[in-house]
Length: 119
Image 1 (spheres, one colour):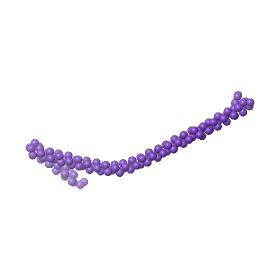
Image 2 (cartoon, rainbow, N blue to C red; image 1 turned 120 degrees about the vertical axis):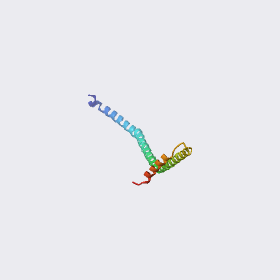
Image 3 (spheres, rainbow, N blue to C red; image 1 turned 45 degrees about the horizontal axis):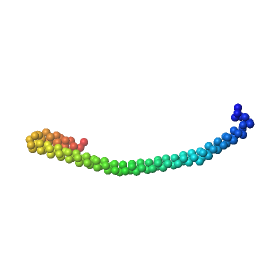
Image 4 (cartoon, one colour; image 1 turned 180 degrees about the vertical axis):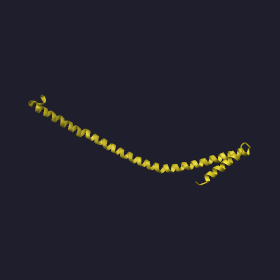
């Protein structure tokens, strides 16, 4: 076997040392600095992303609760406006003789009785 030949041992050892140290220097000077830059970039990116996520969460909590309150207030206001429009329309139709309001007034009394009673 040529690997164990004593005459070729020095030549094989020389090429082994030359290739090993060449690869070692190449990894040490080229690949490791690139890898270190990549790790630093990724860690900075992750920290910035986490910071922006925390800020976004705080904004969402603050403005989201305010928005929900505003939305509920507007919904109730809109519902009141719609009910007023319906009532006015029914009163107009009743005044014109197109609708009999007695059944609507009975239903309204029942609804008010249900909402005003406490369980």
